[in-house]
Length: 344
Image 1 (cartoon, helix red, strand yellow):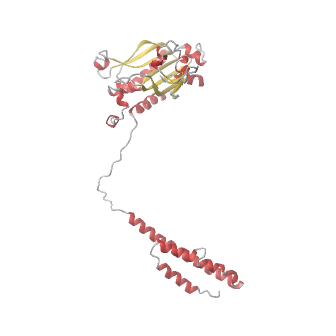
Image 2: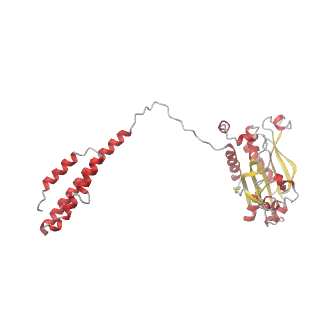
Image 3: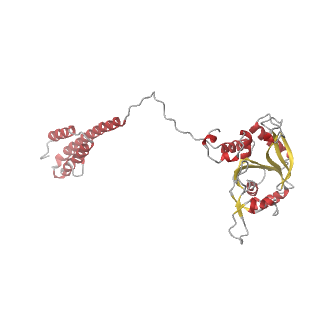
Protein backbone atom coordinates (compact mmCIF):
# COMPACT_ATOMS: atom_id res chain seq x y z
CA UNK A 1 0.00 0.00 0.00
CA UNK A 2 2.73 2.37 -1.06
CA UNK A 3 1.96 6.07 -0.56
CA UNK A 4 -1.04 5.39 1.65
CA UNK A 5 -1.07 6.30 5.36
CA UNK A 6 -4.21 5.01 7.05
CA UNK A 7 -3.73 7.03 10.22
CA UNK A 8 -3.17 10.33 8.45
CA UNK A 9 -6.18 10.02 6.18
CA UNK A 10 -8.43 9.16 9.13
CA UNK A 11 -7.17 12.27 10.92
CA UNK A 12 -7.70 14.35 7.79
CA UNK A 13 -11.31 13.21 7.56
CA UNK A 14 -11.90 14.03 11.23
CA UNK A 15 -10.51 17.55 10.79
CA UNK A 16 -12.54 18.13 7.64
CA UNK A 17 -15.74 16.98 9.38
CA UNK A 18 -15.16 19.34 12.29
CA UNK A 19 -14.96 22.23 9.86
CA UNK A 20 -18.42 21.56 8.38
CA UNK A 21 -20.77 24.35 9.51
CA UNK A 22 -23.34 24.49 6.72
CA UNK A 23 -25.14 22.35 4.17
CA UNK A 24 -22.85 23.72 1.50
CA UNK A 25 -19.77 22.62 3.49
CA UNK A 26 -21.28 19.17 3.86
CA UNK A 27 -21.90 18.89 0.12
CA UNK A 28 -18.27 19.87 -0.61
CA UNK A 29 -17.10 17.29 1.94
CA UNK A 30 -19.12 14.53 0.22
CA UNK A 31 -17.79 15.49 -3.22
CA UNK A 32 -14.18 15.55 -1.96
CA UNK A 33 -14.26 12.10 -0.42
CA UNK A 34 -17.18 10.26 -2.02
CA UNK A 35 -17.46 11.89 -5.45
CA UNK A 36 -16.68 10.15 -8.73
CA UNK A 37 -13.23 11.78 -8.73
CA UNK A 38 -12.93 11.92 -4.94
CA UNK A 39 -10.23 10.51 -2.70
CA UNK A 40 -11.93 7.15 -2.08
CA UNK A 41 -12.51 6.70 -5.82
CA UNK A 42 -8.80 7.33 -6.43
CA UNK A 43 -7.80 4.84 -3.75
CA UNK A 44 -10.15 2.22 -5.18
CA UNK A 45 -8.71 2.76 -8.66
CA UNK A 46 -5.20 2.08 -7.33
CA UNK A 47 -6.01 -1.45 -6.06
CA UNK A 48 -5.00 -3.25 -9.31
CA UNK A 49 -1.52 -1.71 -8.99
CA UNK A 50 -0.92 -3.36 -5.61
CA UNK A 51 0.68 -6.70 -4.98
CA UNK A 52 -1.95 -9.48 -4.74
CA UNK A 53 -1.08 -10.08 -1.09
CA UNK A 54 -1.88 -6.42 -0.21
CA UNK A 55 -5.18 -5.98 -2.10
CA UNK A 56 -7.55 -7.58 0.45
CA UNK A 57 -6.27 -5.54 3.40
CA UNK A 58 -6.29 -2.36 1.31
CA UNK A 59 -9.88 -2.96 0.16
CA UNK A 60 -10.97 -3.60 3.73
CA UNK A 61 -9.41 -0.28 4.80
CA UNK A 62 -11.21 1.59 2.03
CA UNK A 63 -14.55 0.09 3.15
CA UNK A 64 -13.81 1.23 6.69
CA UNK A 65 -13.20 4.77 5.42
CA UNK A 66 -16.47 4.70 3.47
CA UNK A 67 -18.41 3.68 6.58
CA UNK A 68 -16.72 6.39 8.64
CA UNK A 69 -17.49 9.10 6.07
CA UNK A 70 -21.13 7.93 5.67
CA UNK A 71 -21.57 8.05 9.46
CA UNK A 72 -20.15 11.59 9.65
CA UNK A 73 -22.39 12.74 6.77
CA UNK A 74 -25.52 11.28 8.42
CA UNK A 75 -24.63 12.92 11.72
CA UNK A 76 -24.20 16.35 10.12
CA UNK A 77 -27.41 16.00 8.11
CA UNK A 78 -29.29 15.28 11.33
CA UNK A 79 -27.85 18.41 12.95
CA UNK A 80 -28.82 20.64 10.03
CA UNK A 81 -32.32 19.13 9.81
CA UNK A 82 -32.87 19.85 13.49
CA UNK A 83 -31.81 23.46 13.03
CA UNK A 84 -34.23 23.89 10.11
CA UNK A 85 -37.07 22.44 12.16
CA UNK A 86 -36.33 24.74 15.09
CA UNK A 87 -36.22 27.80 12.83
CA UNK A 88 -39.75 27.00 11.54
CA UNK A 89 -41.26 26.80 14.99
CA UNK A 90 -43.28 29.85 16.02
CA UNK A 91 -44.41 30.60 19.54
CA UNK A 92 -48.01 29.47 20.00
CA UNK A 93 -50.34 30.85 22.61
CA UNK A 94 -52.70 27.94 23.27
CA UNK A 95 -55.03 30.23 25.24
CA UNK A 96 -55.87 32.29 22.14
CA UNK A 97 -59.19 31.44 20.42
CA UNK A 98 -58.85 29.51 17.19
CA UNK A 99 -59.76 30.82 13.75
CA UNK A 100 -63.10 29.28 12.83
CA UNK A 101 -63.33 28.00 9.28
CA UNK A 102 -66.65 28.45 7.45
CA UNK A 103 -68.50 25.16 7.21
CA UNK A 104 -70.65 24.46 4.18
CA UNK A 105 -73.91 22.55 4.25
CA UNK A 106 -76.19 20.69 1.89
CA UNK A 107 -78.81 22.84 0.15
CA UNK A 108 -82.25 22.61 1.74
CA UNK A 109 -83.78 21.14 -1.45
CA UNK A 110 -81.08 18.48 -1.68
CA UNK A 111 -81.63 17.65 1.98
CA UNK A 112 -85.35 17.19 1.35
CA UNK A 113 -84.83 15.12 -1.81
CA UNK A 114 -82.51 12.77 0.07
CA UNK A 115 -84.96 12.54 2.98
CA UNK A 116 -87.95 11.77 0.73
CA UNK A 117 -86.02 9.19 -1.31
CA UNK A 118 -84.85 7.55 1.91
CA UNK A 119 -88.46 7.22 3.09
CA UNK A 120 -89.40 5.34 -0.07
CA UNK A 121 -86.20 3.28 -0.12
CA UNK A 122 -87.14 1.99 3.32
CA UNK A 123 -90.48 0.93 1.81
CA UNK A 124 -88.71 -1.14 -0.85
CA UNK A 125 -88.36 1.39 -3.70
CA UNK A 126 -85.10 1.97 -5.51
CA UNK A 127 -83.87 5.33 -6.80
CA UNK A 128 -83.49 5.82 -10.55
CA UNK A 129 -82.58 9.00 -12.40
CA UNK A 130 -83.08 9.96 -16.03
CA UNK A 131 -81.66 12.54 -18.47
CA UNK A 132 -82.89 16.12 -18.38
CA UNK A 133 -82.97 16.23 -22.20
CA UNK A 134 -85.73 13.82 -23.19
CA UNK A 135 -87.46 12.59 -26.33
CA UNK A 136 -90.96 13.82 -27.03
CA UNK A 137 -92.12 10.22 -26.92
CA UNK A 138 -90.87 9.52 -23.38
CA UNK A 139 -92.08 12.87 -22.06
CA UNK A 140 -95.55 12.76 -23.64
CA UNK A 141 -96.57 9.98 -26.03
CA UNK A 142 -95.41 7.06 -23.92
CA UNK A 143 -97.34 8.53 -20.98
CA UNK A 144 -100.61 8.65 -22.94
CA UNK A 145 -100.51 12.44 -23.32
CA UNK A 146 -102.18 13.12 -26.70
CA UNK A 147 -100.93 15.53 -29.35
CA UNK A 148 -103.71 18.02 -28.63
CA UNK A 149 -102.90 18.23 -24.92
CA UNK A 150 -101.97 21.82 -23.90
CA UNK A 151 -98.76 20.73 -22.16
CA UNK A 152 -97.34 19.72 -25.56
CA UNK A 153 -97.63 23.25 -26.94
CA UNK A 154 -94.42 25.21 -27.48
CA UNK A 155 -95.41 27.86 -24.94
CA UNK A 156 -95.56 25.15 -22.23
CA UNK A 157 -92.40 23.19 -23.10
CA UNK A 158 -88.76 23.95 -23.92
CA UNK A 159 -88.36 22.16 -27.27
CA UNK A 160 -84.88 21.59 -28.69
CA UNK A 161 -85.86 20.90 -32.31
CA UNK A 162 -82.93 21.64 -34.60
CA UNK A 163 -84.93 22.30 -37.76
CA UNK A 164 -88.51 21.98 -39.07
CA UNK A 165 -87.42 18.82 -40.94
CA UNK A 166 -86.60 16.96 -37.72
CA UNK A 167 -89.22 14.29 -37.08
CA UNK A 168 -87.94 13.17 -33.68
CA UNK A 169 -88.03 16.12 -31.33
CA UNK A 170 -86.22 16.50 -28.05
CA UNK A 171 -86.97 18.80 -25.14
CA UNK A 172 -86.00 19.77 -21.63
CA UNK A 173 -88.20 17.37 -19.69
CA UNK A 174 -91.24 19.01 -18.14
CA UNK A 175 -91.67 16.25 -15.54
CA UNK A 176 -89.75 13.31 -14.09
CA UNK A 177 -92.44 10.89 -15.35
CA UNK A 178 -90.32 9.88 -18.42
CA UNK A 179 -88.25 7.82 -15.98
CA UNK A 180 -91.38 5.68 -15.56
CA UNK A 181 -91.31 4.84 -19.29
CA UNK A 182 -87.56 4.20 -19.25
CA UNK A 183 -87.70 1.97 -16.16
CA UNK A 184 -90.61 -0.14 -17.38
CA UNK A 185 -88.92 -0.67 -20.75
CA UNK A 186 -85.71 -1.72 -19.03
CA UNK A 187 -87.12 -3.96 -16.27
CA UNK A 188 -89.93 -6.42 -15.77
CA UNK A 189 -92.33 -6.37 -12.79
CA UNK A 190 -92.34 -6.37 -9.83
CA UNK A 191 -91.03 -2.83 -9.91
CA UNK A 192 -90.97 0.00 -7.34
CA UNK A 193 -89.08 3.14 -8.36
CA UNK A 194 -88.66 6.68 -7.06
CA UNK A 195 -87.15 9.19 -9.51
CA UNK A 196 -85.92 12.63 -8.35
CA UNK A 197 -84.61 15.36 -10.64
CA UNK A 198 -84.84 18.82 -12.19
CA UNK A 199 -87.60 19.69 -14.64
CA UNK A 200 -88.20 22.70 -16.87
CA UNK A 201 -91.25 24.68 -17.94
CA UNK A 202 -91.35 28.16 -19.53
CA UNK A 203 -93.23 29.76 -16.63
CA UNK A 204 -92.82 33.40 -15.67
CA UNK A 205 -90.84 33.57 -12.44
CA UNK A 206 -92.79 34.81 -9.44
CA UNK A 207 -93.29 33.86 -5.79
CA UNK A 208 -94.83 30.49 -6.67
CA UNK A 209 -93.41 29.67 -10.14
CA UNK A 210 -89.98 29.02 -11.62
CA UNK A 211 -88.79 27.92 -15.07
CA UNK A 212 -86.71 25.23 -13.32
CA UNK A 213 -87.74 23.24 -10.26
CA UNK A 214 -87.48 19.74 -8.79
CA UNK A 215 -89.88 16.83 -8.88
CA UNK A 216 -89.99 13.33 -7.45
CA UNK A 217 -91.87 10.68 -9.41
CA UNK A 218 -92.75 7.36 -7.80
CA UNK A 219 -94.47 4.26 -9.11
CA UNK A 220 -95.06 0.60 -8.32
CA UNK A 221 -96.04 -2.21 -10.70
CA UNK A 222 -96.90 -5.83 -9.91
CA UNK A 223 -99.80 -8.25 -9.94
CA UNK A 224 -102.65 -7.20 -7.69
CA UNK A 225 -101.54 -3.61 -6.90
CA UNK A 226 -104.61 -1.59 -5.81
CA UNK A 227 -105.58 1.94 -4.89
CA UNK A 228 -105.34 0.86 -1.24
CA UNK A 229 -101.60 0.24 -1.75
CA UNK A 230 -101.27 3.76 -3.14
CA UNK A 231 -103.14 5.25 -0.20
CA UNK A 232 -101.11 3.37 2.39
CA UNK A 233 -97.81 4.31 0.74
CA UNK A 234 -98.65 8.01 0.51
CA UNK A 235 -100.08 8.17 4.02
CA UNK A 236 -96.85 6.80 5.46
CA UNK A 237 -94.87 9.31 3.39
CA UNK A 238 -97.03 12.29 4.39
CA UNK A 239 -96.97 11.50 8.11
CA UNK A 240 -93.21 10.95 8.06
CA UNK A 241 -92.58 14.33 6.42
CA UNK A 242 -95.30 16.50 8.02
CA UNK A 243 -95.99 14.72 11.32
CA UNK A 244 -98.22 11.94 12.58
CA UNK A 245 -101.05 14.31 13.53
CA UNK A 246 -101.96 15.33 9.97
CA UNK A 247 -104.99 13.99 8.12
CA UNK A 248 -104.94 13.10 4.43
CA UNK A 249 -107.61 13.07 1.73
CA UNK A 250 -107.87 12.16 -1.96
CA UNK A 251 -109.78 14.35 -4.45
CA UNK A 252 -110.82 13.05 -7.90
CA UNK A 253 -108.75 14.60 -10.69
CA UNK A 254 -107.64 13.91 -14.26
CA UNK A 255 -104.14 12.97 -15.46
CA UNK A 256 -103.67 11.33 -18.89
CA UNK A 257 -101.24 8.74 -17.52
CA UNK A 258 -103.37 7.51 -14.57
CA UNK A 259 -106.94 6.23 -14.26
CA UNK A 260 -108.47 6.78 -11.79
CA UNK A 261 -106.50 9.89 -10.75
CA UNK A 262 -106.48 11.90 -7.55
CA UNK A 263 -104.98 14.98 -5.97
CA UNK A 264 -103.69 14.39 -2.45
CA UNK A 265 -104.23 16.95 0.32
CA UNK A 266 -103.10 17.05 3.93
CA UNK A 267 -104.73 18.98 6.75
CA UNK A 268 -103.13 22.42 7.05
CA UNK A 269 -100.07 22.14 9.27
CA UNK A 270 -100.34 25.84 10.16
CA UNK A 271 -103.96 26.16 11.24
CA UNK A 272 -104.48 22.47 12.12
CA UNK A 273 -107.39 22.24 9.71
CA UNK A 274 -109.25 25.30 11.02
CA UNK A 275 -108.63 27.44 7.96
CA UNK A 276 -106.50 30.57 7.39
CA UNK A 277 -104.81 32.49 4.57
CA UNK A 278 -102.10 29.94 3.65
CA UNK A 279 -104.66 27.20 2.92
CA UNK A 280 -107.26 29.59 1.47
CA UNK A 281 -109.44 29.22 4.56
CA UNK A 282 -110.11 25.61 3.54
CA UNK A 283 -107.99 23.82 6.14
CA UNK A 284 -106.31 21.63 3.47
CA UNK A 285 -103.01 21.83 1.56
CA UNK A 286 -102.43 20.10 -1.79
CA UNK A 287 -99.13 18.17 -1.81
CA UNK A 288 -99.09 15.89 -4.87
CA UNK A 289 -100.92 14.14 -7.70
CA UNK A 290 -101.41 10.39 -8.00
CA UNK A 291 -103.44 7.56 -9.50
CA UNK A 292 -103.44 4.05 -10.93
CA UNK A 293 -101.23 3.71 -14.01
CA UNK A 294 -103.31 3.93 -17.20
CA UNK A 295 -103.56 0.64 -19.18
CA UNK A 296 -102.35 2.45 -22.32
CA UNK A 297 -99.09 3.34 -20.57
CA UNK A 298 -98.58 -0.36 -19.89
CA UNK A 299 -99.23 -1.16 -23.55
CA UNK A 300 -96.73 1.51 -24.63
CA UNK A 301 -93.94 -0.13 -22.60
CA UNK A 302 -94.84 -3.71 -23.47
CA UNK A 303 -96.62 -4.70 -20.26
CA UNK A 304 -99.86 -6.69 -20.30
CA UNK A 305 -102.51 -4.48 -18.59
CA UNK A 306 -104.61 -7.59 -17.99
CA UNK A 307 -101.80 -9.10 -15.96
CA UNK A 308 -100.27 -6.12 -14.14
CA UNK A 309 -101.55 -3.08 -12.27
CA UNK A 310 -99.68 -0.26 -10.64
CA UNK A 311 -99.84 3.20 -9.14
CA UNK A 312 -97.87 6.39 -9.71
CA UNK A 313 -97.47 9.72 -7.94
CA UNK A 314 -95.52 12.92 -8.45
CA UNK A 315 -94.66 15.85 -6.23
CA UNK A 316 -92.85 19.18 -6.48
CA UNK A 317 -89.97 19.29 -4.01
CA UNK A 318 -90.10 23.08 -3.70
CA UNK A 319 -93.79 22.91 -2.80
CA UNK A 320 -93.14 20.31 -0.10
CA UNK A 321 -90.31 22.46 1.28
CA UNK A 322 -92.42 25.64 1.23
CA UNK A 323 -95.25 23.92 3.12
CA UNK A 324 -92.97 22.20 5.59
CA UNK A 325 -90.88 25.26 6.48
CA UNK A 326 -93.44 28.04 5.94
CA UNK A 327 -91.58 29.63 3.00
CA UNK A 328 -93.70 31.99 0.91
CA UNK A 329 -91.42 32.64 -2.09
CA UNK A 330 -89.89 29.93 -4.32
CA UNK A 331 -87.20 32.34 -5.50
CA UNK A 332 -85.49 32.15 -2.12
CA UNK A 333 -84.26 28.65 -2.95
CA UNK A 334 -82.21 29.88 -5.92
CA UNK A 335 -80.97 33.35 -4.91
CA UNK A 336 -77.99 31.91 -2.97
CA UNK A 337 -78.60 34.19 -0.01
CA UNK A 338 -76.43 32.61 2.70
CA UNK A 339 -78.63 34.07 5.44
CA UNK A 340 -81.56 32.06 4.12
CA UNK A 341 -79.63 28.88 3.34
CA UNK A 342 -78.03 28.74 6.80
CA UNK A 343 -81.48 28.34 8.34
CA UNK A 344 -81.61 24.70 7.21
